[in-house]
Image (cartoon, rainbow, N blue to C red; front, side, top):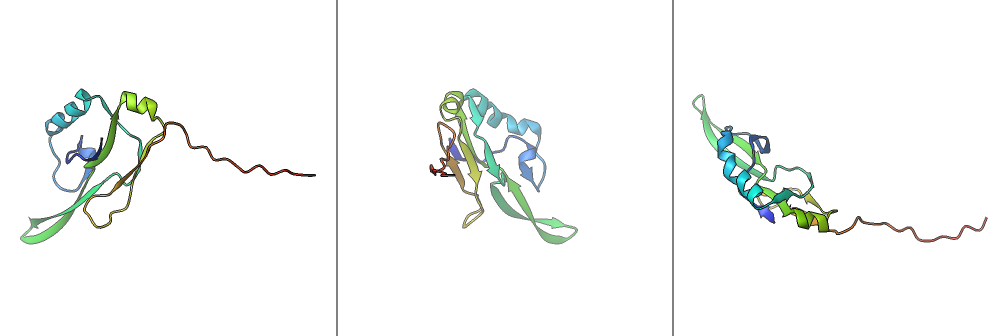
Length: 121
């Protein structure tokens, strides 16, 4: 599964805004566990969503930036076994408030072959 889950598993996946109670993350964590899902290794800026919220601070209206990891890639253990060399890259924000995810799905490590060159010394 890859895409926007519109939820986070903990406050460590959020920057800005108010912290949430730990109990608010339990339904999403339970869904992940009950479905036997495991995160696919990822790199890049994992804060996949950026939003701006207005709030009043000392009588002034201030726009705060909030970043969260709402988008992710997960798979079950069998899938991870078959496609063990898969990874996900979080791309740059472009035209949306969500970062696109690029999954490279491979069942074996990439091999780079050097062309054979005969050295006549």
